[in-house]
Image 1 (cartoon, helix red, strand yellow):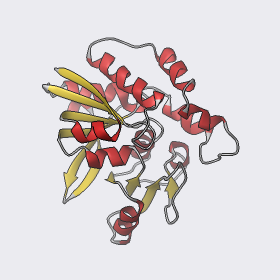
Image 2 (cartoon, helix red, strand yellow):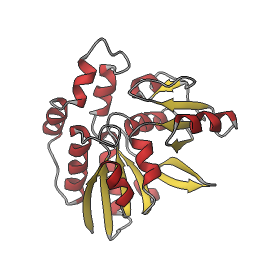
Image 3 (cartoon, helix red, strand yellow):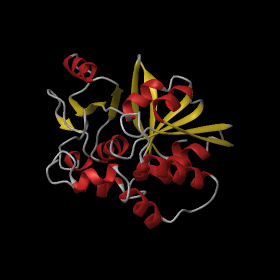
Length: 232
């Protein structure tokens, strides 16, 4: 199995094989929490307006996402794992729009299969994909708004690669590197309440969820669902 590492929106556009789009802060940590709270499926879109239109059409009940880290007007929740962790989500469908993770998903048109990657679902994602024995896996670290590399996504991509190759990276070392990064500092600033420290804590809780986030096209929409290793 060949493993390629790529970054940012250009990396997502060029990715092929089984593709893992990595967004640690916060899209695919938020998605993992949503599934653990009973969400049935998550519809992934690039733009805020598209998310609201789909909700208005009855495709889903809730819009979740961010622009500049903040909840867009008309959305039900920010792209915040800690916020969703206290919400009543059982049986609901979420429509999710962020400036990195979901944009990367939409851009990865060359993928044979798609998965959402984060530290929260790292080992489960590797196990699900390993069982499929693909020839090529491309791991794309989306970074800040898909434009600027970010330590948390780059470190997660390396973490996933090491797991695929049979190594067991030190969890504390990974967390220390991410905590020192620029994006992590946003969660230290009390003047930015839309970046709660609890979100960072949940994003760095490695392997806190035992499923992968599989994304498939259903009736022209990108739809994420849980996938367990035994289902692969």
